[in-house]
Length: 138
Picture 1 (tube, rainbow, N blue to C red):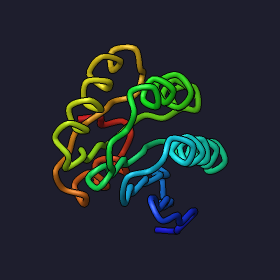
Picture 2 (picture 1 turned 120 degrees about the vertical axis):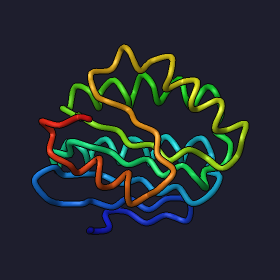
Picture 3 (picture 1 turned 135 degrees about the vertical axis):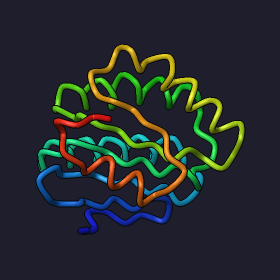
Picture 4 (picture 1 turned 135 degrees about the horizontal axis):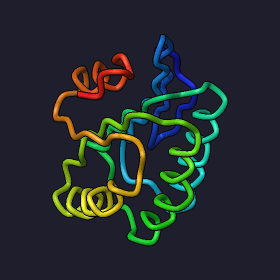
């Protein structure tokens, strides 16, 4: 695991291997401008490193504004599909309202995306699934 970016609110890690995985470990609340900048950087890393899976560790992520989620849907999630992402492992926020809002977005758009989104409670299980052989999406 290689650290690509460290911010007070986020660590981005690259898990290199047959299936490159980008892990976004959110550490706290992040202001709208910083959220968008970090997500844009993660998308750029995805393209640069030919990442095929993401692990989104949202457990400590603070509240995310609905307008930022709408932005992320159009500016990040759809381009991830175009970049060849196959899997997205999600560890949901510990904040109940945040978890409900973000999960609602994923549920609403999941059918539009060509990659598989799976929810996890365990980071190691999320990493294992994300980095597993792409011919077995089970």
